[in-house]
Structures are given as structure tokens and as C-alpha cells.
Image 1 (cartoon, one colour):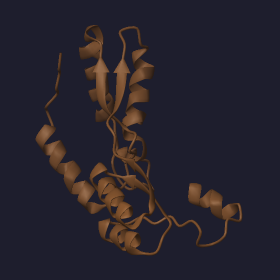
Image 2 (tube, one colour):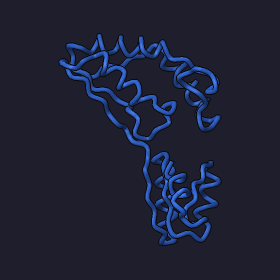
Image 3 (cartoon, one colour):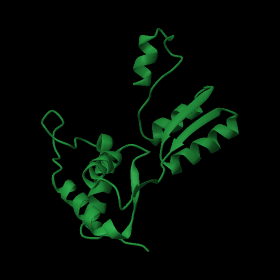
Image 4 (cartoon, rainbow, N blue to C red):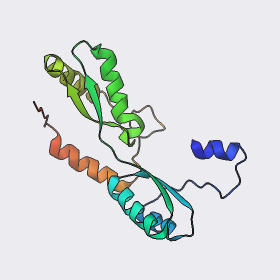
Length: 162
């Protein structure tokens, strides 16, 4: 969206470029004569970018993977809260660095929240984004494999920490 806005505003060609690619593409770009890198992605990749940019005295802005939390209080409207939490976690197929990855739930509503969230997830339709689905493709095939492995391993696991 930012790239589109810059193009529409008459920003000169080549001053800003949006490039989506693998770590090989990233390494190639960092080795090019550039003035600034703005990266959104994993913490591991961001640290590598900071290191490389620091060696060349190139400015770097990195928005790296976080661990955003959701909080559910006992007096929450659970219907609204569950829908908001669903989108906070799964907007853009969950491929958002600020997506909620942890939930803190007050004990009196813990079981109810957990059941409502599981029920909401059972409604998710995965498939071709040209059809009526909730989840379309992931950015890279490697992410699909990783997601399948996590689902297989954690299918029935629910964690509760006091």
C-alpha cells in the first residue's frame, strides 16, 4: 500500500522500491550501493541485516517478528473479544509481524475463552483466495511446510501457565 501511494503521488521512479524475496535476494540488495534498508521480517534476518548494514555504514530500519499479546479480562464481551482476537492473530493468513501470538486470560473465563476460540477456528475455510475462503496462500512454500509441522505436532495441545 505504501509503495502504491508513493507511485501515485509522483514520487520519482527508483527512489523507493518494494522488493519481496528470499534471503538470497536480501543479501544481494544489501551488497548493492544503497543508502537505506527498511526491512520487515524475522528477528534472525533483521539481526543479519543490521550487522551487514553496520559494516557498510548503511542506515537500517528493521521491523522484526514480535510476540504480541492479547488479554482477556473476566468482564469482557466474549463474542466480540473472540472475533477481535481471531482477526488480531489471523489477518492476512497470520502473516503479520504484529499478530497476536500469546493470550493472557483471567482464570474465571479461561475454559470458556479457550472453547470459543477453538470453535471459531473450526469454522475457518482454507483454499483458493478467488473463492469464498478465510485463508488463502502463504507467502513462501517453506512457511506452508512449517505450518503443517506445527499443526501436526500441536493439534491437541493446549497450554496453561499459572
